[in-house]
Amino acid sequence: MKMKRNMVVVTWEALVGLAKGFATTFIHLFRKPITEEYPEYKRPLPERSRARIILTRDPNGEERCVACYLCSAVCPVSCISMQSAEREDGRRWALWFRINFARCIYCGLCEEACPTLAIQLTPYFETCEYKILPLVAEKEDLLVDHGGKNHDYNFYRYAGVTAYQDKGEHIKEAQPVDLRSNLP
Ligand code: SF4
Ligand code: SF4
Image (cartoon, rainbow, N blue to C red; front, side, top):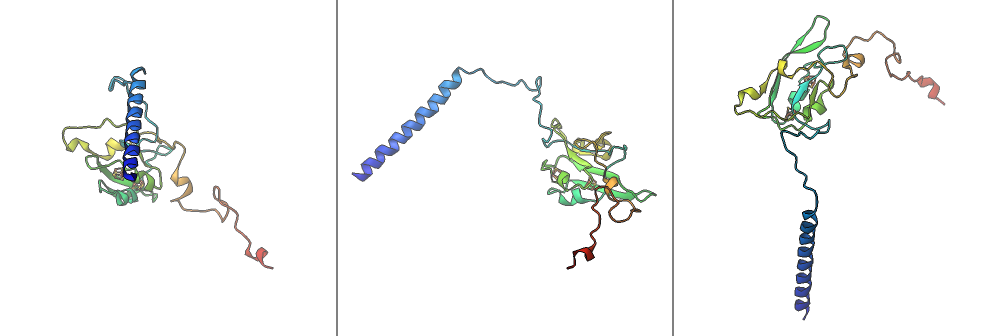
């Protein structure tokens, strides 16, 4: 008897599910179709979409990349390589910088790791090629003449330069605490 009741319940649930599915299909019959004619129409993608990678510049027009190798180290598919160099004033830069887009999985970890906001992923995704070699991008292919998503950020305003000021005189630095004032 109990088994028969279970069968009835299961059959009823299946019929309800079927009816719901048909109802959804029926409702959509009268809706205006949403067809995007790509590539004639290109849907604007959010700024944080992860596709083609660029190397950006700081507000002074200098290359942001300081060739610290962090992006290269964090990349799960090891598709970033570079050679570091140092200017006379001590500022580091990348002599060459290469990304193999044939291996890149657009995970965004390089962007997360970059301390200078140099490497950034953009929403531009139309990068397909028939051959592998054109997918290997050199520094001149990656370097742009703007700051990408962070126009105002300049790493060297905050770090990487010789400090002449006293404690508490740097930008946004709190004044040092007088420990003796905390004593009872
Ligand atoms: S997006 Fe991911 S896979 Fe592509 S270069 Fe950056 S870390 Fe590597
Ligand atoms: S892009 Fe960023 S993380 Fe990669 S080497 Fe340059 S500064 Fe370092």
